[in-house]
Each structure stands twice: as structure tokens, then as C-alpha cells.
Image 1 (tube, rainbow, N blue to C red):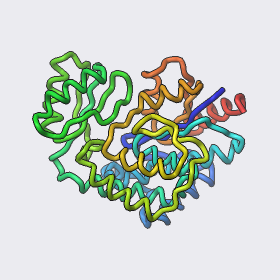
Image 2 (tube, helix red, strand yellow):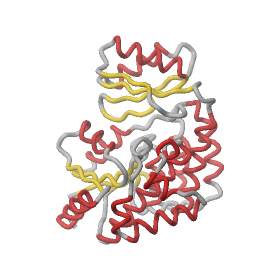
Image 3 (cartoon, rainbow, N blue to C red):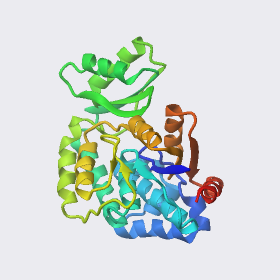
Image 4 (spheres, helix red, strand yellow):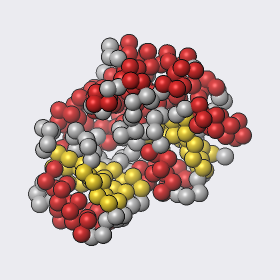
Length: 314
């Protein structure tokens, strides 16, 4: 059975993430200690004990989620060395984790990149000027029409197409609020302004993408060992040079998560393993396709279920 591994993005973090598996498996604990040394920050303590307000700051959240996800990935490789996923994919920040897992960049480069990415995203737009909002119960086409109406000359776009009826919009706060109000009038089941520090995945982040691209030139990128389905176009990507361009564009372009999931299913994937904190991606994949098998690696229970599955398919 073909399977893919997916890595979570921001909003999957919680205080205590990684602790259970770190207490039992050295490789998890050592990976988190390695992250501390690389960044000179108490990443492990932030993951295990918080405080939550520090963990949720974008520039801490991004390296913390990557560190925990890579720790779990390494554990999976150690316990099941013959594991052979057909694809890797990650949601926004998770795409950087996929690059590390596929040996495109090393762990240290990945952590430093996402720390900078978090800092630059936070700085790109003054606090309160930008916003993001989730719209549930309308189609992408309906939300795109609402964005066209509500923009009124400001930046407003679909930023995350998470499931067929869960779309996140991003841009100037006033435009986002207008869009949420119109969506409610048009029958959206739920609308909510997200608690984020910046408007990700819209043209207000263009400068961040350009700065990251300059940063990529200082890092060795290799071709992917496992194809990575890119957020920007939902296509499997191998070549280092292509990955750099797509990663730059990802900063200010929509995350095409639904298309990415459907592409992997079209290529024969029957199971998805979410490796990292939380189960956000599992929920989104389930709303896109009810028939695929979903597994996770987050604690003892989910690790055992995933290992049992892998033993059956290898």
C-alpha cells in the first residue's frame, strides 16, 4: 500500500508536545537538545513546559514544531529503517520540515531558516494591520468571489485551502473583517478571525519571500530523496533549484492543501501518516477524502499504531 508522510504547520503546537516520547526514546530527547544547541534557545523547555505565550510567538513556534516533528521522524526511521513513503508534504511551515526529512537541507539549516522566517513574518506588517480569518461551509469559488468584493483596494486573498469547505483568507485586517461579515451573510457555517501575529500567505509577505530566497543562496540545497508535494502547485518536486523557487513563492501564495492531498491520492496513496504535534492535518485530510487510512506519530499509542501499519506494508 502506498503511503505519504505529512508534517504539520503553525497552530498544531501545544505545551507538553514531544514530552511523552522524549522520556522513552533517546533519539527524540537528543534531537530536541540538538535544536537547543543549534539555536541557542530553550526549545525543549518551551515544548515541554511553555509558557504558552512564549511558545505561540511565531519565531518560537516554527522551530519548536520543526524540532518535534523531526524528532518523531528520526524515531520512526530508527524503529522502521525500511520505511519508504511515496511522498512527503508539509502544511506551510511543515514544508520546511519535509525538506529536512528528505535531506534537501540539514536539520541545523532548517531550524535557522524557520526561526528567521518566523521573525521576518512577524516584522513584515505592523501588529494589527494584517489579519487572517477562517471561513467554514463555503466553497473556494464562493470565497474567492467574496475576496474580490471585500478587498476594496486592499490586500485580501485565499491563503490556505485546507479542505473543500475550510478556507482561510489573509490580508489587511479591515478587508478580512469585511470578508468574514459577507461570508456569514452568504451562509457560511462559521467564520472566525484567527489569533495570528501576521497575515501569512498573501502579497504582504512578498518581501519575506525575497529575503528567504537570498538566505537560500547561503545554504546547500540537494535534490529530494523522497518527492515533496509542494504547497504552491500541488506537484511532486525533486530538484533543488525548483524547491527553492517554490519555497520562496510559498511565503506569499496560497497553501493548496486540498489539491496536494488529491494529487497524492491520484498517484495511488491510500494512507497518510501525520508526523508531529497535534492532528490538524488528519482532520483536514479526512474532510477531503473519507476513504483514506489516517495514522499519526505523536505519543506511545499513535506510534504503536503506525509501526503496526508499517510492518504490514513493508
